[in-house]
Amino acid sequence: MRKICVITSGRQDYGHLYFILKDIEASNKLELVVFAPGNHHCIREIMQEFKTVQMTPCIRGIQDYGNFYSFVLDALKAYNPDMVMVLGDRFETHAAATAALLLNVPIVHAHGGEITKGAFDDKLRNGITMMSDIHFTAHEEYAKNVSYMARIGEYRDCITNEYCWNMNEDGFGYERFDTQDEKTKKHVKIFNVGSPGIDWLTRAKLKTKAELQQGLSIDLNQPFYVCCFHPETKNLANTERHIKEFCTALDKTGMQILFVMPNCDPCNNIIRQVVQSYDDAGRYSDCKPHLWHCVDNIDHLTYLSLLQCAEMIVGNSSSGIIEAASFNLPAVNIGTRQEGRIKPDNVFSCLCETEAILAAIDRAREWNALVGKCGNPYGDGRSSQRIVKVLEEVKEL
Image (cartoon, rainbow, N blue to C red; front, top):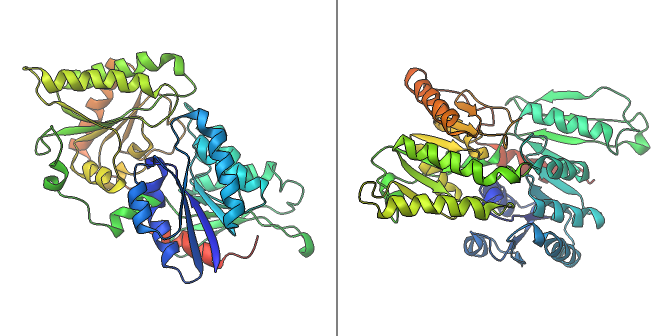
C-alpha cells in the first residue's frame, strides 16, 4: 500500500480535495492520511469521514506559517508517507510543502501553473511547483506553464529533447522530459486533469432552494447575487477603498446579497468590518429589510448549490472563473486578484470602482439575456478519478 498524506487547510482547498480523499480511501492500492488544522471549517466532517486524521495547529493568519511548518515536519516524520499531496497556493500550503521537501518526501501538487497577478499567491504557488514531483493542472495552458518552470528548475541540465505532449482519448494528457542516459533519466510528471472542484457536479446531488433557505434571511425565491471579496495582497494599502467601492456598487443594484466572508489573508478584518456594516444596515433598516446576508464559511456542496440558484456571482473569488461556467452563471470579476487566469465567456472583468462594477454587472446581465451559455475549460467532472489512478500507477520517484 502506498501511503498518501493529503494536507487541507480550509475551505479554499477542501472542496477540491474531497473526492480525491474519498477515492484514495476507497483504493486498494493506497492508504490515506489527512492533516487538517483544528479550526478547519469542516474538521468534524473530516474526522467522521476519514479514518486517519491528524489535527494541526489552528491557522488564523500569516503569523502561523512557522507553527504549521513545524507541526507538519514532525507529523511527517511520525507517519512516514510515500507522498504528500497539496493543492493551490496558500502560505500554509507552502509551509507544508517545505516540510515535505526537507524530509525528501515526494510532493504532489494540484492546481499549479496558474496566474493571479493581484496576489502574492503566484510566488507561493510557483514555489510549491518547483518543489513538487507530480503535477495535476486544471488546464492545458497551466500544464505548459508548469513545464516551463521545470525547464528552469532542477531539470534544466538533463533536458535534451523538446517536451512531448501526449493527449489521452478523453482529451487530457501529460508532458514528460527525458535524458538520453537511462541511468540518470528523470521525468517531470505533469498531468492535465481539470479542476477537481467541478467533480461535485457529476458525483453529488446539489441542494434544493428549500434546503438552502434554512437559516438565511434573504429570500432565495427572489433574485440574489453570491458575492465574495478577498484582499489584493499585492495592494493591501487600498483594501478599505476597494471594499467600500464594491459594497457601494452592490447597494446601488438593490439586489439581495449573499456575501461569503473572505479567508485569512492579511487585511481580511477590514473587509469583514465594512461588509458587516452593510449587513447590519440591511437587516435592521425599515426601508431595506434583509437585503444582505453574510456567512463566514460555507461547505463546497452548499456553495455550488447556491451558484446554481443565483442570478450572478460578483467579486474576486476564483470560483467565479472556474466553477461558475458549469452553471452558465454570469460572473463579474473585480480588480487584479484573478488577473492572468484563463476566463470562460461568462466572466466580465472590471476595475474595483463603483461605476466600473455597475457597468460590468450590466454587461453580464446582457450576456445572460442574449447568450446565457458557455463551456467550462476547467474540466468535465472526472478529475479526481484521473488523479487517483495516477497516484496508484505512477512509478516510484
